[in-house]
Image 1: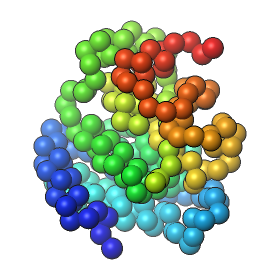
Image 2: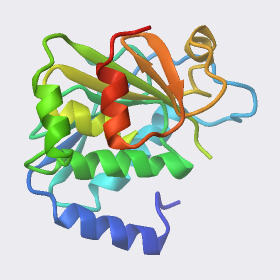
Image 3: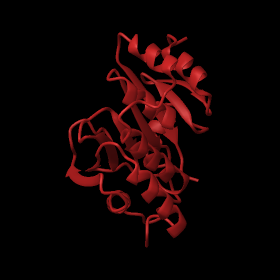
Image 4: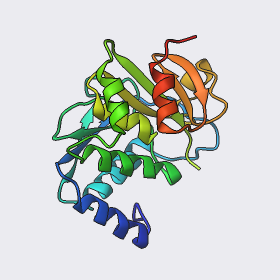
Length: 142
Length: 65
């Protein structure tokens, strides 16, 4: 089964064709927490690999690599979005399906930009940060 | 979610992780996730829902209450 519908796939191909630098999807597999009831018999790790490999097929500058329990991954499955193959602290923990697949596609598009897409005043404010800041955003597929 | 990712891509000091709540119910329960998106800053739940970029920056850069 394809990851995206044909019309969505065409859109994503267009976005990925505009990437200004390579983006690697590093999929981390390992012991998984038992998900909530109702998740069925989904093999989350295998599905994560399928989704990320499927996205990598949509752009020459997008690649996918799979590792068992890579450093810096507290939960599995997960995927790090790595511009130029570098760890920049951008990750999706869990399987991004449904609406949330858009978040992963968006992360690839953002990571593929050579300049941040935030407003100049936001970039300036972040530039004044003198400590580490960890943002976790809980999401649910719909 | 994209705003958090944009912040991480703009600053080496910022990390951003999306966490699928249903797949990690124990962590979600610990952090009282009942609505999404729930934004957690440095391990502290801060707010639910999407906000515009200036407000997002103001909230993540403000000290925890």
